[in-house]
Length: 419
Image (tube, rainbow, N blue to C red):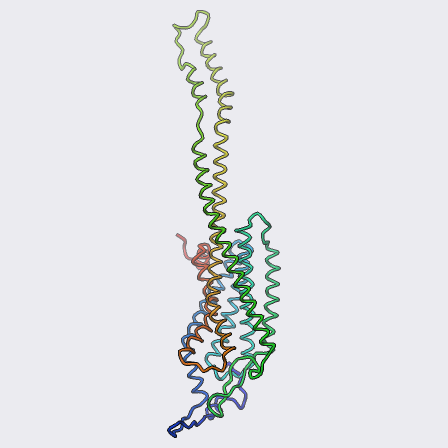
């Protein structure tokens, strides 16, 4: 058993801890803490299975992501942030999710403070890391797309940003150890107490806890607002760039095909007789002299006139072809940047969509603890609480769908022959 149980709160004692409740008709109802715990386990069972599947998928997917993006592909600031984001998701799958599963198995019998603190500390740490890395990726994409001529984020700057994010997130995660743990609370049945993970001093206002969650809420809202703002600007800029490049490309093609090919050289050669008629030659000239004159004239035309005309006519074509070639390379680079940006945008959208329900459920629970909930409400609540874990396994799936090099490297690693 993963839980450290006090001697007075062992399962054997819980079996003996039962409550007899008189109903309106005078009958008595016998219930134990294990039966109450089992009811909660059944409510959370579908979501426990869901996060167990996400844990398995996320472990494999994030390990592959770290290996491919970190060691197989050319490392860039964006890919470095992707590797760090995968490290945070790997911590969620390897540590946070198992702690959540343990709490789902013993939702009303969690008496171990360390389990509760371990879970929330790492949950806060990884959640804030996701904030930081997604925001860093959005800023780097903004510089690439909207300000390509300005100084870009270098690898050294990216490493400094990562170090700052880790220090800040670790500090915030450690702070949760001071107010979170296993809490004892009475149930509706006399003599039966439940133990669950929550903030300590639950009965009294904990201003430290309120301040922390207030700061956490503010940080989440600011981060989401910045992410939406940056990607909105990026999308508009990419749309304008696409229209401008289409018009410019068409103009260059029309200009390159409209350059006339001069015929001066053809006219020069037309004036030179191909054969010499000896009967029409003057008496003072021989055939050899005339042929020598034609050869010299041909040589003069080819060496002087042809060179000038060739340079004059071909130089603009070469310039246009060079411009078209440069435009093609620039378009390919822009397409790669656009493709990567859209991939990062998809990851951000998935994170926001999966995080907001969980975040909202936690806030509603902290503000409305005294309200009684029905079974349907409990199912919706616990579904929202577990959506946070979906993003940890979805990122590798998006990478595999959007990046052909990612799949190619995995196939190469597994020894699958490429077509």
